[in-house]
Length: 479
View 1 (cartoon, rainbow, N blue to C red):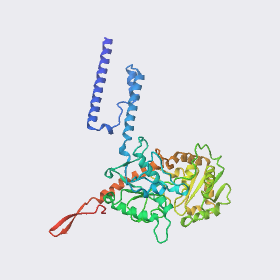
View 2: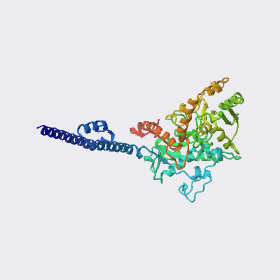
View 3: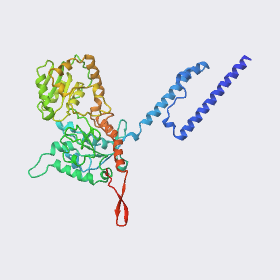
View 4: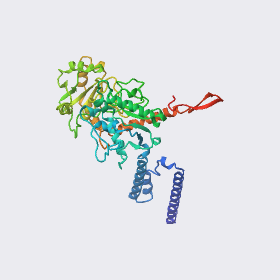
């Protein structure tokens, strides 16, 4: 009788188990048919509960664990596939501007009606030296061209689309920085090539259907050099600008709500396999560069006179000519802290040299805006000092000398973690500077669409006519 009772209990258990399984399967099928399954993450039972049941019923626990792990891994794979979709990639329409606006400025000569170089065969080189720090438009254009034939979509944040109606934004491939650096010299009685290109650009863009459709609000224009696009910026200001800072822009033309700040491309060689520490970097504070600057940069010379005789401080004039980059690389790689002081504009390349050197930046620039600050906390790897405090007698040097070894080490480690966000590569790599810029642009898209949609709320208005009132369309950029 006891054996019969035991068999009866087991039969009831298995019947209950089968009923539960069928119920769960039916629930699963219902959710799948309604499309709700994709947004629902669940485990039927946690592994600990399954193990308890298995032990109670003398089942093989190893098989239960295996089944549970397989199920959890399958769920993770589904979730990862769900996140890795093209729907989250920024879709970019790029105007096929004549080569005179971009690669021809680098000396590239296309054949016939060819607008773009065959970058699968050869990539035109960007001029080195001081030009390179503002080369942002070059890297972004290359990345869009590469997106059309690259099969590896891993880590990509933007792709080029040929139909502007499918695009999130419209990219303008004008190499404004090199145009200013190389072609802004005036000839007697004539406009510079740089000025003529800007006039042609304004005429071209404002005549396009893409510009008329949004009033230019969804266009992206790179003007990283602070003196680039001086004429066109006043005509094309509804567009999103990618800039180094806002130092030479009125707030009505460029501001942090509308535009994107991009990093400079650093000069200093990256500190690969950095095994230094607090004690192995003998220089406490390092600065080498132009000391006598205009406007906000006056603080440099005042700090020079305050710090030049301090022990373990290197503060001197220098440039990139000759072996200047080699000396600066050696100096920054062997320093604990590196000064980033405002120059003629709030930003400078020196901040990104310091990051590449894992030299903790001391930022003295009250008006500075920083790249990707909506996702990066710079206070984790930089020290910010107000200009008024930095100019107080011995304030800055005492502040730096009182930073502990432990605090410095924490920031040094964080610098090594974030440096990838400020590196430029071709082909671009996941979360490098190029992809981070596209991501920053992407975060602006909802606000752009809201502006465009708001301007389109009233597409028609009622106006008097000869035979009463008639409907007349409002301009697309109304409002």
